[in-house]
Image (cartoon, rainbow over all chains, first blue to last red; front, side):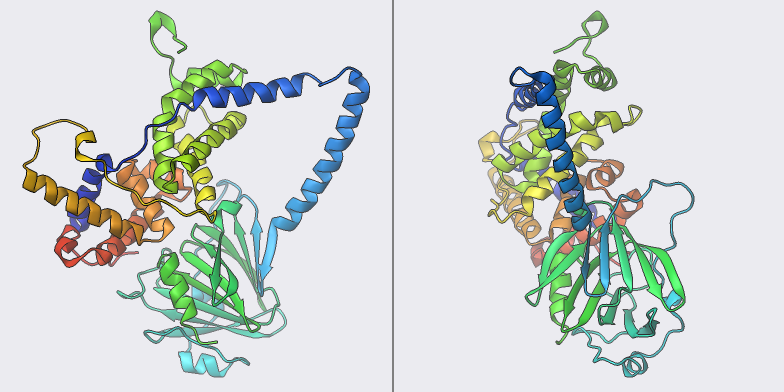
Length: 254
Length: 200
C-alpha cells in the first residue's frame, strides 16, 4: 500500500496535527466522582431498616432483572424477511474458524439468465455491469433463491475472503434461509433502502446458511446490507462503503 | 499522581492492579494519563466537543467496571480506545448535526522547524482543507479507519483493536478507503495517491 498511497498517507499524517481539536477537558475528577458515588450508593442503604429494605430491594432487582432479560432476549435477535440476525458474542478462537462464504457451497455456477429463469419470482439486478455468474439456493422446503456474483473490477473491488467483487442474494418469502451472528449491537448499523428498514453490517461476522442439504456455518468478511421489499429479502455483500452500497441497493428495480 | 518506588510514576499495570482492588485514585491517574488520546479519538469520530467529552467520560466509567476482564499483559491504550470508539460511534448514530473538522488557525499550530513561506503555508492550508472536505464525503467506516491510522497515528494492530476488526482486515479496508478518498480528491491532488486500488 505504501508505494501506491505514499503521498496521500504522508499528506494525511501531516494533516493530523493541523486539525483543530479542542483541549481535552479534565475528565478524571468527573469519572472518580461517578465511581465513588456509585460505590457509596451500593454500600449504604438510604434509610434504616436494613433487612426489610434489602429484601424489598432484592425483589425489585429480581423483577427488573427478569424484565431486562426478556427485553434482551427479544432485542438480541431480529429478522428481516428471510434473514435472522442474532447478537451473540462469537466464542474466542478455540479450534479453526469457520470457512469463508464461498458461493460454490451453493452448487454449480449457472449463467445469470438461466438462474433467473429457474426461480419463481422476478429476480432483479442492480444497474451497472451484468453479473458474471449465478447460483441457485434451495431452502429447507425446496423454495429457490438466487445469488448473483460479479468478478472484482474497478466498479466492484474484491470482497475479502471471496473471489468476488459483489454478491447479491435474493430470497423470496420469509422462510429463514440465513442466520447471521454478530458480536454486539455496535456491529449493526440501521439503514434505509427505498424507504424500507435495512441493516448494514460492516464488520466480520458469521453466517449460517440453511439449505435443503442442511446448514453450514461460514465467515463473512465483506460489508453486508440486508433489506426486504415486496416479499423478497435482498442481501448485498460488497467491499463498497455505506453510501455506495445504499445507492447500489436502490438501483435494483422493485 | 500516585508514585511508585523512587518517585517514578507507576506503570499502567500497577495502576490497573490498584484500581482492580478498588483504588479509585489510582484509576484517576490512569484516566489522566489517557484522557488526551481518548478525547481526541472521540472528537475525531463524533466531530462534537460535547459528545466527545460524554463519550470519553462514559468510556472510562465502563472501562473501570470491565477492568476484571482486561488482560494485564496487553497494552491498555488500544483497549480503552476501543471502548471510547464504541461510545463515540453510538453518539454518531444519533440524529444530532455534526460539526465539520476544521484546521487550526496558523498561530495555534505546533511550532517546530523553520516557518514555511507565506506561499507554501497557503498551499499547505489549501491542500489540508481539500483533504478534510474529501474525508467528509466518505462513509463512516472509511472515515474511521483513516482517522485511526493517520489522524490518530495508531499502528495497524491498534487500529484493529480500536475498531474491533481483524488485524488482517485493516490493510485491505485502509487500501479501499484510501482509494475512495483519492477518487473524491480534485484532479490537482490526485497524484497524492499513485495508482488504482486493485486488491481486496
